Amino acid sequence: MTDILLIGDATETMRARMAAQFTIHELADMADPLDWLKAHGANIRYVATNGHDGIKSEYVEALPNLKVISCYGVGYDAIDTAQAVSRGIWVTHTPNVLNAEVATTALMLMLACYRNLLADDAYVRSGKWQTDGNAPLTRTADNRTVGIIGLGRIGQAIADKLAPFNAKILYHARNEKPVKYTYYSDLAAMARDSEVLICITPGGPSTHKLVNADVIDALGPEGILINVSRGSVVDETALIAALQEGRLGAAGLDVFEQEPKVPATLRALSNVVLLPHVGSATHETRAAMGALTVDNLLHHFKNGTVISPVPECAKM
Ligand code: NAP
Ligand code: 8YV
Image 1 (spheres, helix red, strand yellow):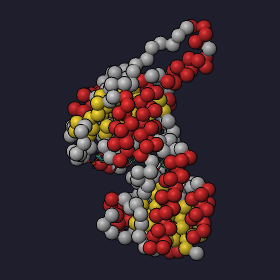
Image 2 (cartoon, rainbow, N blue to C red):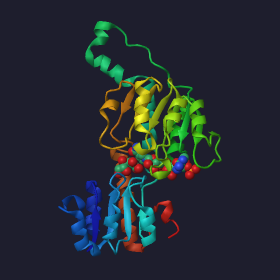
Image 3 (cartoon, helix red, strand yellow):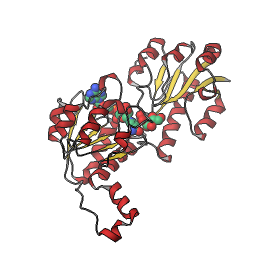
């Protein structure tokens, strides 16, 4: 049997498919992972991990015969791809199979912010509807100007799902695309022209705190910020200050700077909707992601190539 290192959790189906071909060693079972890897790492040819855990560079160093790091998720900012490429190690991820789900999460957050979903739910539960009368009016989510930060696979799915809401779509990315939406190379300028900003870029150094205090102020007191990308993309301290001071209207957040830690100051705010990084977390979508994660491993085991490499590895 060939040895695989499993970092983080995996579904029962993923485990069963991996166990049929590989001997699984779970990082979570190792008292001192680095010690264990230094002793046994030469046997490990495959790693299955996820977008949150990735893999530490020192672990990769301890795996001299590693061939593939398969990531259960599309975002791979927790994996050092330069190190992998320099060693000829494939990094794979799960693009496309989660586009619709993450787009639904972005819309759910946007709708919840405009229509005050959480406050209205609390109003009914508290009994105030009966004692105090009808809940306050909210704001419509229709006919809004929405700036999408990162018009890639998921960004496009978000734009598609906004069509029935008659949204005017603006976008910011590194490159202009052959689409009918309006391109902004200047993010703050797009924020000024948007009523909602939806952030769906990758994480990592190039997008670190891309949504800074200037962008947040440009979005303004009526504006809504939705982040379904990575917590690192938004300056969380600047965001909390703007929400506290009414310089930003509301925020819908699925991701945070130090997950699963969410600052108490953010949790105390009433103008936020907070989700525990569940953008893709449905049974159906996670099954599709799990299948592709394992398919990549098995494909390499049988054919020596992979199905969905990250762009950095595409030329290997
Ligand atoms: P993708 O197809 O690669 O699209 C990424 C987009 O971001 C592209 O439009 C790209 O612009 C843009 N971008 C990249 N770097 C940028 C920068 N420095 N400044 C401005 N724009 C930049 O990726 P995807 O499949 O849509 O996934 C996007 C990300 O969503 C993932 O990497 C992950 O972090 C996050 N995600 C989160 C969840 C969740 O559970 N919340 C689930 C899935 C994914 P160009 O096209 O011009 O290069
Ligand atoms: C997952 C994600 O929560 O795909 C991504 O980039 O952030 C989510 O789909 C994560 O990768 C869990 O593995």
